[in-house]
Image 1 (tube, one colour):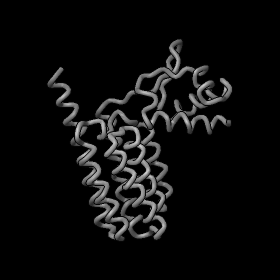
Image 2 (cartoon, rainbow, N blue to C red):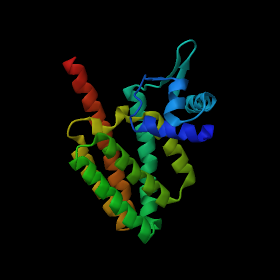
Image 3 (cartoon, helix red, strand yellow):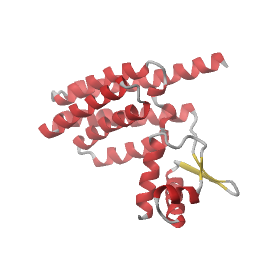
Image 4 (cartoon, rainbow, N blue to C red):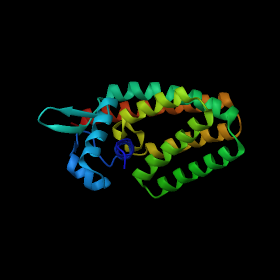
Length: 213
């Protein structure tokens, strides 16, 4: 397996929460886990370090980078504003096949939430937004969003806040309904609403945590 393919797998595993913020990334362990050479694992770590997803410290090795709440919120704001633009374009440019797949994605999200599967919920959220980005056909926005998404990780995700996943489901349903119906302004507005609610939920979670410490 090429180093870039290893980097992609590691990136996705970090996004999915299989590696946590500040968790050490050991070359030998990654090589065994992914069935690759240590040099390929090392190259993957270097690639993600260049992206800012991993931090390397002399004599201490590599760790998954941990972001402050404010950093995560700033990146979420930038990412979701671009995502709203993609939703508007998707409503205009999406094909009938795209719309069918998008409806399947939101059904997967309902199922994951019903089973109370946090990992599957995160994955379904990601698939919905990823498909909308693909439908938009805006390569530059997609590249920027995916870079920011790599950096924010799960540590700022609203699904980690009790009860938030149910509100998030309703918001995703509104976004998908607007895109499928070919209503660009409604798709944009629904995504912006989701952005504001995500950030408000994260801030409230941090505030509540501080008050109970």
